[in-house]
Amino acid sequence: MKKTIITISLIIYILVSFTACNDDSNKKEEIKSSLTIPEWDEKAKSTIDNYWSLWNDAKKDPMAATSIGYAYSEKLNDYEKAIEWYKYSNSMKPLPETSNYACYSYQQLKQYEEAIKWCEDAINMGSKDALTGLGYSYSKLKQYDNAIKWYKKAYENDDINAMINLGTVYLNKKDYKNSELWYKKAIEKNDYEAYQGIAKLYHDGFKDDIKASAYAIAVINTKYTKSSVLRLLKDDWNISKETIKKGYELQLTSDEFPIKYKGDLGL
Image (cartoon, rainbow, N blue to C red; front, side, top):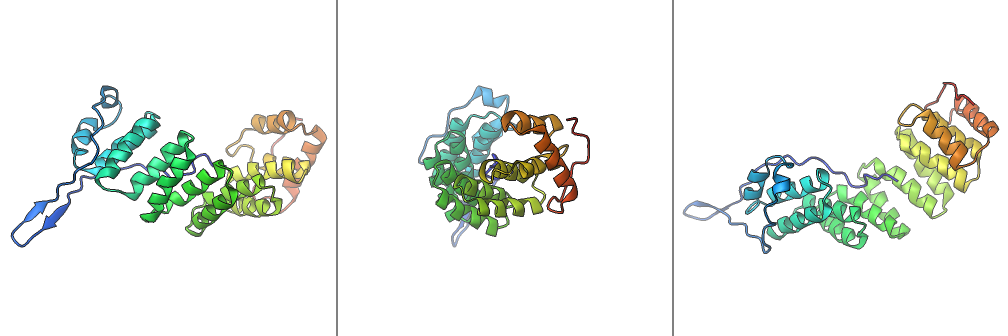
């Protein structure tokens, strides 16, 4: 399954001014948090770009607070501190990006029930990115039917990661036909990880080690090295050299494989 289940895109901080109008003049709307701003962090000052400006702007600007939380998550891998900033930001003004990022941080902490709450909030505010995050959280709780529901919604909203994730969930459910269907959809979109997923399906599910070998071999020298693929087939899956060679020939000669490895296996 894709590890990067939530789409995390770099926040470019933009100072946002909220204004309220009356009959006489324009006045800045005071945005106040019900929570105390997280304490100044000297470590973050030396690591997070523009930390001083962001920290001061975060007293009244939820996007600045979210930006700090994101930096804690992605630069420092401090998910608890990230969540502290996301909650602070959310107390000023709930934003779909903030809830989506909080969902991701809770996933990294393996607190999937909390992740679900934040992903649901993000979706309710219009986030499409959070659809996959919600599906992933349910899959980690082995609530596969709920995971399928949300992954399919993500697929309907053009999330290409949803296909391989559906393949994996159906594999976990031992619904091998549907798993094969979704992995092949992902393969049609040139998702190299789907080749490894469907190889596992043929090995564990269909008990067809020739096809398992063929799909694993086909993506050698894409994002997988020859040594890692052969180690998987020979050492982890205990597939014989003769069967691996048959898989090699199959991926060369069959139209089922959009890409092919034509090099020497060295067996």
